[in-house]
Amino acid sequence: MRLVRYGEPGREKAGIVDGEGNLRAISPLVTDWTVEHLSDEWQHILAALDPAKLPKVDGDIRIAAPISGISQLLGIGLNYRDHAAEANMAIPDFPMLFQKALGSISGPYDDILLGQGAEALDWEAELAVVVRKRGRHIALEDAYDYIGGYMVAADISERDWQFSHGGLHNKGKSYDSFTPLGPWLVTPQDVVDPQSLHIWLTVNQDIRQDASTSEMIFSVAECIAHISKFQTLLPGDVILTGTPAGVGFGMDPRMYLRPGDIVALGVDDLGKQIHRVVPEG
Image 1 (cartoon, one colour):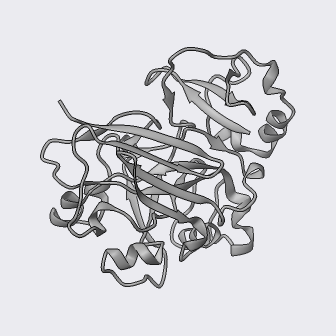
Image 2 (image 1 turned 60 degrees about the horizontal axis):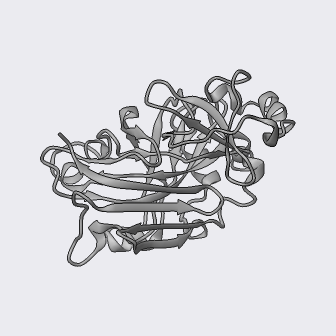
């Protein structure tokens, strides 16, 4: 099942994408997708639906982040060996955890803002997972039972803010539009193996990232189990599982996004995003 939200900010509605890629309305059964709909009960209800019998939604409609009520945005840093190498950083012994502000969430086709004073705007394509139930000290073998769905994520980063303004990563990761999610939330039964997905990103149609989630240092399950040792995972938490090599920060010379650039990215079976970089204001 591919869950989608559509409409202008603050007025989004719940929908489903059918097997032919058509957007279908699911109201009044569901008005908006929330963590509640990731429960076993709701998954059984949704599995019994025939999307072809739902009303088709036509026209030029904004697609939003595919789930509302996200509780935390958690990122895993340096989770691909080649990315750690290009950043000239050591391979981590444990998953490196950071957080992003919820205000950075945007839709899969929304503009990426080049904020005032931003000079080092960078791209990162990632596989994201949504936590569906509360968990602490989760065993590795139980980790997948806590996943409510998978989606494409872009971890947009302003490298100067990230490394030169004190603190941890958050300053460079949390600006408005820096975490586009979607276009869909794909339920777990429709993702055969999250560790064998093709992940890619282009800038102005030039390939920058081209890898597989099989190259992760720490698997999705390992990330979930590790995080739960140090904090309680909550329903609606979104975990960005890291990015492969090919970011602008790792190029020689370094290359960053400029106004008018077009960034496209995707993950096998989870859809793709397209963004234009625009100067704020």
